[in-house]
Length: 501
Image (tube, rainbow, N blue to C red; front, side):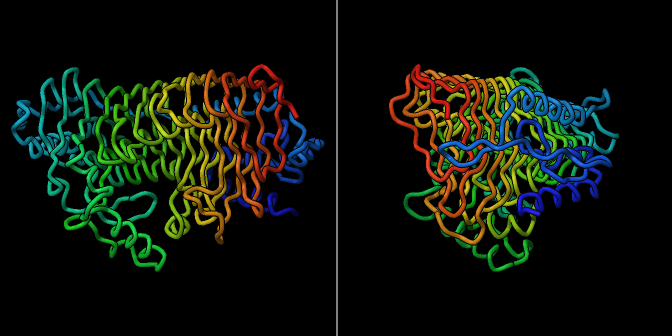
């Protein structure tokens, strides 16, 4: 049995033991719709893999685009059937009834907390933030609570780090610790939501939060180094305590180990770092959200990390980093937790500024698999890449079955598609990623320096990368392709010239 088949069988068995309804799809590599040879599925034996085809970039499985698209569509349908947004009783708790004042001056933290606790105690419902500017510190949601921001409402978060104490269990860039609370936070809760048309305003700027990223001390550098060393040394999470006196920035919103999550309609802006960060969550819907945070460092828009069953649709995103990123823990701590992100659908979103439109990585240690991107539009002179997958031999993890279809790219500042295994210029390590089975079809791009930047490693090539029915116009430079085994270009046009292999 090959190593790849052994891994596929193990994932299949793990999913079956966990009761995952999609276990029967394990090891599907988009090789013309065929399952890996010999894998027992649903009481039978899957057919052998399709014939191979030799190309300039190695031997690739024969590829039937129509069959592969049908198989991917069937998996998307199964994922969407499992994703069900939470529903809430028709009970309303107006924060002004608990003492909140929307004058952009009064501290409403205690009033918002009281309204959330009352809603939870009553069996759930909606905590209403009416029109107005409400100053607040950390908001902690409880099971059964929808925090609803009415039209014209704004939660203006304190710029004082003390407003986010005591410390809470969190993940900082893929490593678990105790740190400042996210501005909106939940831990081990069910049926929670933030909805409405109001604004979560992190109020971060060059002198609050963002100044922790570099420049003269104090900054986050020593704390990041310490945290990673603690993880490498196996220090228990409970002893990795930061917060007061330290400089690890919190997220604008983090839901940690929660189930049945809805984020809908809201605008998020000016976060200290990552904006919306569900981590170790199951059944997550992010719908119609606007991320307006193009200026801050590490200001990712939506980062789903170690999550299962995720739908991101109809969102508009402009950030100082990746617009949407799928992550799964980092290095030693990612291997300790070892939970993948899998079964995610992104559709009908618009991206402007950002380092990547839709990204996997760089925190890939637990694995990022079964990601489907459909009907998105991306364009900005400050959008570096449209589709970006990044990892390195310290991160490891399996990155597989990522299927991108009908993406329209206007302008990008670097490669339209970038898949690299040397992130942060790391090319050696004990944990090479297993990256294979990436399909991009019906993508069009109007202008960028280059179409493709594909870089595996000499000892760890990218495998089975397929582009079908794609058109790249206005490309200024040649593709950069190294260490790729099984690259397939089918009906791919670059500057009007067919580039099939």
